[in-house]
Image (cartoon, rainbow, N blue to C red; front, side, top):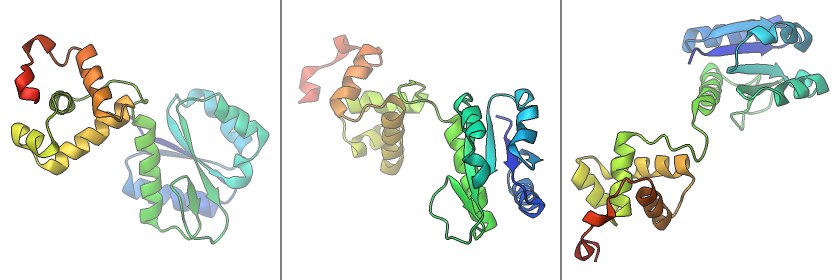
Length: 193
């Protein structure tokens, strides 16, 4: 994904400071806009996936809210013009250091590229783990069979659960059977006991 960031802020100092931080730390295209009307004029040519860093007073305008509601691939981080300590990834504060800003922008890009829940885009290794989970193997046994660490197995299971939106082992088993990841005719009942 070609990373694009659009900064909407009336302060040239804030605009240029954020642009400088992003240019030095993230491979992304950055464009600056003083106001939402300036941004809106060119918005139709911007593509479908991008990040907007927007001053909080512009974020709350009805025209900006309407604009964002009609854009699926757009992520927003608001810029707060106060000296408050940072608490979440969806807001940049004046006290945030470069590392915090870069982290927040990277998290936003990761969220934009993350598959939707229920979208079964499992990797080959995740399918291997899913098969063994469905057959009743414990994390340690799966790790031994696949020659990976237990920590890696746990990470794969977490990813599988997030991607599929299925939390129970029985649900994962049904999913594996329905999607033909497991051939039920080759299962030996005594192996499951």
